[in-house]
Image (cartoon, rainbow, N blue to C red; front, top):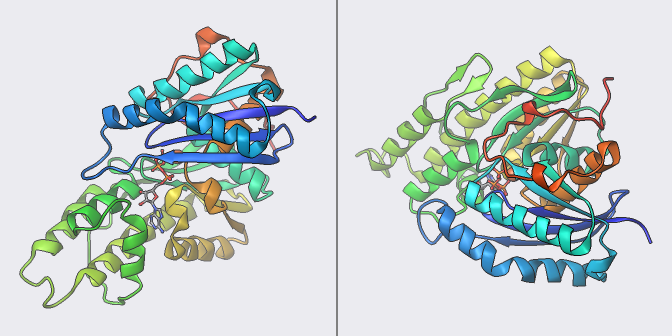
Length: 336
Ligand code: ATP
Ligand code: FE2
């Protein structure tokens, strides 16, 4: 039997367990996603849900994979970055399993995992990556032993910004897919603040202005919600595309990878594909099952690190809620 890894994702609203072998073949992936009834993510409520459910998720992943927990050879977990109280649960479950089973444990940076699963699933070697989700907006590529950050948000992450706007418009979480649908019904662009500072992005001015449109006396007279959704998307995605294109020109990478939950958006895919073609770069979107938060990406990145330098000591498995991906070396990759 091939060696198996059980990967645990627990940085925010998703508690997920993936089981895969050391060659990257996936045996199971089970997600449990916290859905707020109203407002944003309350770490205490997310933690409660994850604490109540983790064993069910682990057991379901084992039963779908048709294996016993005794067949697992490695435990990987998301160690950084994320919400402290939520990260702690994944770390605690991972430490427990590793100690009970007497098998190695590896802590993984969640953002790096988003890139590594893309490299695996899209058979892509050395991409410039645009990682866009509820909690992150990062343009990154491998250089000088690390995944360097070429551009990022200075305030609101893109997914969070769209979700907040959707909530203001009375739509339920997650707002991203609903805004995408509404935007398809419009071609009327309302000018909104476009803020790119150097290589970084700021979405708070855009958000505030879009929110004001919803309560203006012109709303449902001169323009409607579809037009607002369209204008919000066009502005935000043009900003993302501009920064991605400049990073592509600078790094001269020949592949572009789009990942994170917002990668599901067809309009964003279209815009990033366009600039990739302009630069003769191959464009790939991570399959949606693996683009959002998932335990398989954590497992795969754990396998890569384990193969390169073995497991972590238990003392090294403390959570690091603020750790950036460019603070970590990537020993399994070499310079091209
Ligand atoms: P991370 O922890 O990496 O920040 P996350 O917790 O936000 O991730 P993901 O599953 O990666 O989880 O992303 C969820 C986000 O993706 C939400 O903000 C959601 O609105 C957004 N999203 C999903 N589908 C679409 C879409 N079609 N268009 C725009 N946004 C989308
Ligand atoms: Fe994520």
